[in-house]
Length: 353
Image (cartoon, rainbow, N blue to C red):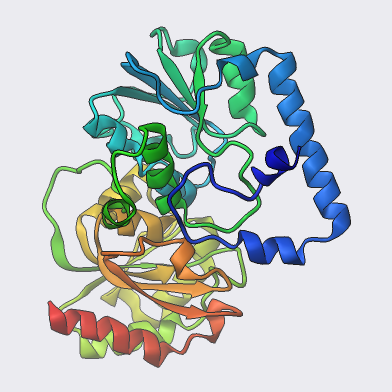
């Protein structure tokens, strides 16, 4: 039983990634531990009683050709970019890979360079699969597996590992590597592990800077000193075309910036679809913004720039090697980060270019 409960805070592979399991376990109350272990036990029992446990495989079986990755529990843009980054390892080994996604993240992966087919509705899937990769056992993904692919063998992606801070990008690469029976060693994986999104037609406007504004998480994503930063950028970097991006929660911030700077900046806040926003980022050279969905898209397209982090350390959100984005971290909140520090880091990037 202890071995089962250990799965809650132990990744299912032999290689290592940054995570906070030990720290979080020390901080966990006895009541919380009992509750989480009971929930884990119930999920495991459900797998046994439904017959799904007997279809579980530790790694991808021989003679597997066609795989469906069920990832419908991932509803966050940034999480999707990170969690699915390891898909290219499967393609490199010759597998045909389809994916079932939540509609919110679908636009990022439609016509993907790695997934063969991308679905949001399991009813529309008519193919026969040799294997399913199951995102999580505690979500709608498992219900979908039981209902539509009841007799197909499966491998866990995340399994019971949950509630622990970890690097999603590294996890994706290391977990897929384990499913492939470890063709790559630790150092190789760490160098390979970076997110990528489909190539978008059209060139890059090198001096185009996207500033992602807005946000709802006060500690991680709400930065209130963009006016000072834009003011200095317009003076020190007149060659830049500055474009504001964000969704509805950035409208007020965008209005304030436009009131001050007028047509010296371009406002695209709450005007673009997710696919159009990705296109805009893919065609740009630089990025400034807080940890969030747009930052992860910028990272996947290799934009140079500065990413701001509060509370959540960047080592859990960015590639640990060869990241195109440099970062600034404050252990309390992004609002504590001084504009001068952001400007100095960004201008140094321009000088290197």
